[in-house]
Length: 193
Image 1 (cartoon, rainbow, N blue to C red):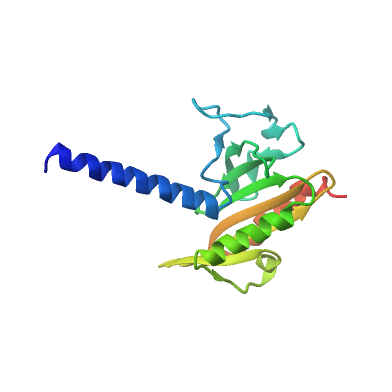
Image 2: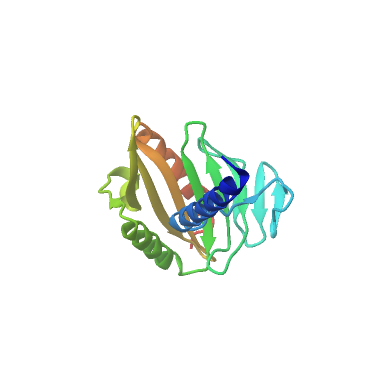
């Protein structure tokens, strides 16, 4: 195959990859894909973040420990018009989570947008029990391990609203979800009214 034939195909592949990244960013609220590195990697922004003992602290009050339950913090997220700051976490077993702070009173709108985007993408809403029943859950796939799910919870505090998005597999990781959500809720409890 000639280089002339490969170049258009490579350009098309790059465009498709960019579209896929944008779709994933939209589906996850732009959180995990558009994350900014906590380590200050070249081209990344840590605007508003500073290192504290065993974590990172944003000037708006959000603190993201290095470890939250069974999860390790991978990145911090920069602010945008509808999101103040956030952190990306992942476990060794593949559970991913994104904690985001939002302006006071806006988490309901964020949750509605999450629900509308997932439904419009054809994902089926899950009827869940336990701690997942307090969030909005969708089935996003199936594999040998079980049903892949994504759930969004929202929390309200004095000076900000918060959302917690998690991706996990049922029934394999069902027992791990509750303690993780409780760890995040405990972290946010001192910010509650």
